[in-house]
Image (tube, rainbow, N blue to C red):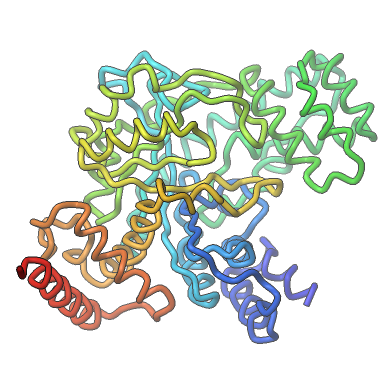
Length: 458
């Protein structure tokens, strides 16, 4: 069984080989000791196609191990995890939502000179595009290819900046292709992010230091980094299985600005261009709320202020910029922040999508906050996305936000509730044919009309 688990998470195997290993694991009773499935969901799990210790198959399996009901893959500048993630979730009886994350320019908006939700840049915003219909995956790959090229060029220049520091510190230097790009799935449509650079740097530092104590000394004295007590404690922890990821998080928060180069509008396209593309393929473009934060769980973000001081104006502008939703992470923010955000989303008819960013081995796949009554709507919206992706994959008119959807004149909450119920029925079915999807939708419409009529009876 151990060998099978290793194959499920082997990034050198093909997606189909990993799926076959997952089939073998399930067939051998590998799930019998796993937690029962709960209501919990997560729409924001990174895989090896951006930066993560998990293949799509392993990400789905870890989600099932944690008792999640729905797992969603979201990679930076890449949708390549989608097919494998969908297959893996189907094998495990989970709902699935696939999408990708990218940075866009807000330079043409009133927020051009503000730090919005991006710790590294002003006027550059993180957003997600979720619920991508399967027939549109090739169009997404074509859309993202120029972004990959721009990002690669900037990555190479950042490694050059890093090598200047390494030479001054009399440390070995990095080779971009050998040490950084080799960590990625870029040859298969994956992206190479700043985390790949920092992970390669972390491996170099670990090798040079030879011990946790010497590493701390090297970081503080040679590289002049300030370590918090918690960061130092993690690095000095005996037999720490997350050692390199903890070091990566430290470098992300305290070192990245020493080598960082701001991306341009070719790498971060104008927001209106990206939201228009998302809607053209029947996907759901979502603004990623960060909010003023304290120290993050992975140690890769400092205490800092972001969009809360101008949140009313920002959320109010999102529909005009082409957004259909807002995505946020309940564990990251205070109840007061989230209540304010929820109120604004309801006011501006924006779908609320939850997802807890998973890109480190230290992070738990569980999100207990999602079980609180205040976040019950996030469970419904997740299942609605499951139904949306399944139906829109069979016919674009059946997408949740399609103007030709038979439910298009219903208010958003009613559509979400209807699609949520359908998503829970569809979670483990085979991919839908157009005729089957239309049949299901007709049945759902009839049931909704019957329910509405019963509620109107005296």
